[in-house]
Image (cartoon, rainbow, N blue to C red; front, side, top):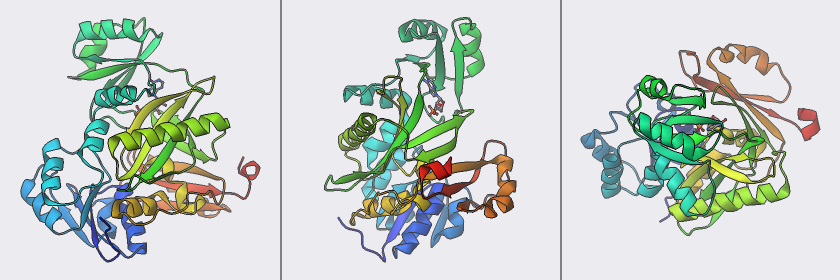
Length: 361
Ligand code: AMP
């Protein structure tokens, strides 16, 4: 069903992704209603309505659902019961399946492998014995212990080696359920963002090449410096995953690229993604506009690159450089309106656009 301009898009989550979606929605003539537990949230500054309530407050969710024409998410970690409840009261895009799978690293990896797409070797861990068995199963020299749920930006992750005291690692982790992944000596990391409509029609953005520091995305560059066949496989796998999820909206798929150019999926997110921020200045259509188009089931925009672009995150105190960034030619600054520049907090980003990739370097 098409949601026409003039309608109201309900967005669960009040972070910077919701803020940039709201701004894109406004450009297309839509209103937005943000649902966030936090009063002074980045998206709350630029929406038509803000509901401040917890994600399990069914009364607030019902009033929210009744006030909008479609519900979507800029944050996927909300209780299953709340997602089902929203589905009873509104059109919800993406649906339960995409959200449920992407909330849980074990379900996510089981699902990806069921599609014959590879991931790092992994195993479930609920106690020290599981951890010992899981390390043997991965067969790698190093491994990463991750919480199955609610981990992001490298939080809730511990890298371990064959020399680690696994009993102590498990105790110190304070995790109740975890996944152990073999540590992948990847050549590079890339991500692909796809938009998909109710008809199943979909369109991928070009892959971004990503560099992380301490588990947090630092820089994304487009075009990615990868072989054509890697490019094609990344798009093919992303499309296969979006189709299997029956996704309506946006999906980001993060990949590890191995030495031989083959790909392992690291994780998926059914919403706009930090590695797609380059599109705001370097692409015909921004990921946020495309998100609105997909969720409202109106025609998708072109994903052609206009400028080779390098996106740099401003994390914590980096944001204090805003003034010198503005003095740089071809730097486009985006700030998220957050008051406190805490360590590891994403405060904004800069898109460096150039006419050729060589100029960028
Ligand atoms: P994640 O939150 O799972 O996306 O992890 C954040 C970052 O940590 C990734 O983008 C990688 O740079 C690194 N990382 C996560 N898992 C692995 C792994 N199994 N092998 C190597 N590096 C990893």
